[in-house]
Amino acid sequence: MPSLTSSQASKIMKHANFVWLKERAGRGEVLDATTVEMKLTVAIEETFPKQNRTTDGAIEQLATAAGADWGSFYVPDMIVVGEAHIDAAPQLKGTDKLLAKALRSVFAGTGGGRSSPDSSLEHIHIGGVANRNLVFDPASRVVLGIVDFHMESGMNKGQKKQVENVEGRLGGTTTKLQVRGNTVSGG
Image (cartoon, rainbow, N blue to C red; front, side, top):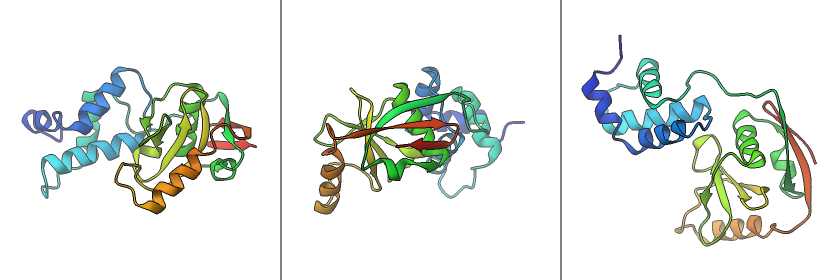
């Protein structure tokens, strides 16, 4: 039995997060469970504020309606190799399933990013979180680093300086990194 009535589900399906999720699922993009859950939780809570309608059943119902897999992380067996600026490599290496997924999509050229303010570079919200951004050059697929705040035109001077420093790495010395499952190594 569904957690949401068809009327409730229809209202949520008009929310921007549901539309976003359905578009990406329709293109065959692989989204991790955390992103799916977060996007749908926000859609439910904003559509029905303070009504406690966010349940696993409701998320599963909406994820199924969007055509998105929910409940397990996608971890391919293959190894993906790519380039990162040498100064970015230390912050990228280690085991982090959400970061590994973002790097895999950049290195494989399968994930489109968001445009960066005043720049030709792009960024991906790691795990769907706007305050953790992987900055990269879409043309060369070189990763330049991570910025831990929302990248937007209204950033303060310190944030703008940090973005300039990361973006300034473009054309600099790079190193090879490999993503295997949830682990990033190399460099």
